[in-house]
Amino acid sequence: MAIAIVDYGMGNLHSVSKAVERLGAEALVTGDRTEIMNAEGIILPGVGAFGDAMEHLRASGLGEVMKEAAAAGKPLLGICLGMQLLFGSSEEYGQHDGLGILPGRVIRFTDGDYKVPHMGWNRLGFLQKDNPLLAGLAEGHVYFVHSYHVLPEVKSDLIAVTDYGRPVTAIVGRGSVYGMQFHPEKSGELGMQLLGQFLKLCGTKKDKQ
Image 1 (spheres, helix red, strand yellow):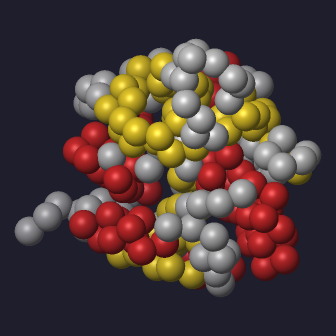
Image 2: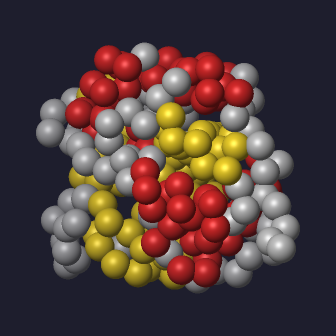
């Protein structure tokens, strides 16, 4: 069993794949549709600008593969920019359409008494403690690096928030589609626990020998 880590030219592929392997699953870094659809679960990473990422996804055809996978009920996790790409649009350096798998938009942090980008460790507040992604976990700190944040249209899609001058979307989910604004692979014990919960939902987490 394998987790497909989508290689579309933008993403922290190495650290995500190593984290998946540490949790006992096979990490398959790939841009091949067949390999992605045959995997037990999919991780869409992302580092960089929203518009550039969508251009890469469209040019490679992988944007349509993500939509196909989500429609088929394949477990899909977007990380950082990868979470933002799941939504309908972003105002980062102009207006850009996203994948539209989840309804909502991505906006820039407004000026206030806090620094942009939001960078560092912030505490998660769980809104859906009965969500299988959070099962058995305690609230704690994870590592964020972002200048834009998601405004989901549907309240029930919001699983966890953090406080950065206002409640900020940290984890989203609907059905088999999830997103984490922070980097779970860089977020210590809680980050690895959350990533492990996703793998468990995929049926790929194995007991360590």
